Image (cartoon, rainbow, N blue to C red; front, side, top):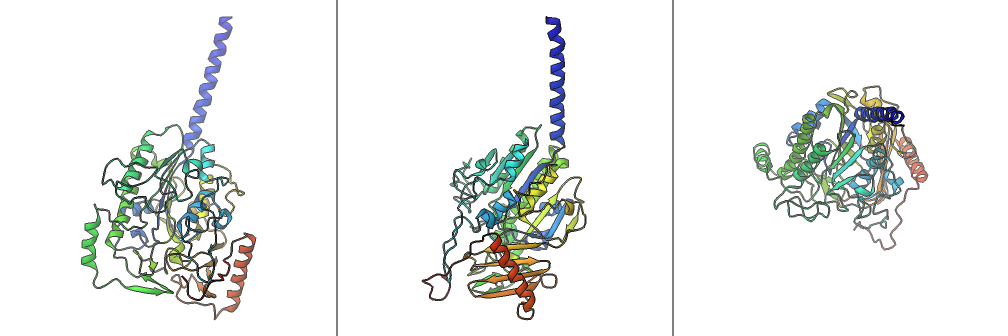
Length: 482
């Protein structure tokens, strides 16, 4: 009896060993993902995108080792909707998160448009899909997609370090802060450094036999603009040596836009992000993970440029910034490095949007696309490979809310090189050709009425198809936005 059992046991152990080895080999081939999402970082805030005042050597090196996108867009000019679009591959209108959570409730000619105060648990995130295929999923930083019960660990992440319902860092950037999901280790601790340490700790202690998603969402460079003490003096001296006179400004409707990057405090916050990116990329290299890790770098909306008084950064040559549907509000710096896919130092001019990350990550992971999930995103794997861009696509933005940047309700469409913006408060429309006028200075709506009508109708048809919530007249309105 024993002699019959023993060969069977050997066979069982041999088969089990083969299955484990096969599974390990399959996991080893699947790429890891590191996703850096910066808060309010402007398109022109990086040296590799033209900034001469800010200094970002580590992010510049990432761009030199991968592909830089010059026409990458966020799905909304504010944070929460874009964050939802990245995670779901779905337009903010589709998930009913069209404003930052919970919004400011301002009214003017129109009443407040009410949307969700969280990302519905029914929505399927990229973290949930990857986790279902054996990925470890780690989240650190700003969440801003709902209160407890709708935190990262409720949306597919194994770990949540610092993510909660707040948009600004609770209690500030220096400890003692008041973050319910991140206890400070010591007074004076700097938030970005701590998030970096936690991310590196994950890389060092993860299950080495499984692929992973590390999703690091910085609170930087969101207000309150707070100097990074280790770097601010350098930029204060640089500003003194570089600039003369007061910061120039540009009038933008009822607001003012900053027309020069010269804010030392802000520049130091950008430098803190750059240092963090460098530290994590160095750790990937030390752990010999860099050859099988896709790195994505993105911002959730344009830089804060326009306010009643000017914001802390300038997005020139793009117009305006966060909260606005001009290019400065929705165009984001974007870098992707995918080993064996992207060619070092390449640049793409193809328009892409934040909903595209979900399907692209699926394809990079060798997983089938799920268009019913990422309904508004397209895989850009072909672009990453350096292949010819697909036919021109149409992009839509719907932002029917009032915003502290002095933006009033409106919507916009980009169709090829044509961009149309509707301003409901003023009952006005503007038309631009981005190929000739990326700074949106020459309004063609009056001289090209047929193109204006065509794009307005196309935008309205999309809004109707998506059941977009439109702003309703305010019966108490007496003139002048509040």
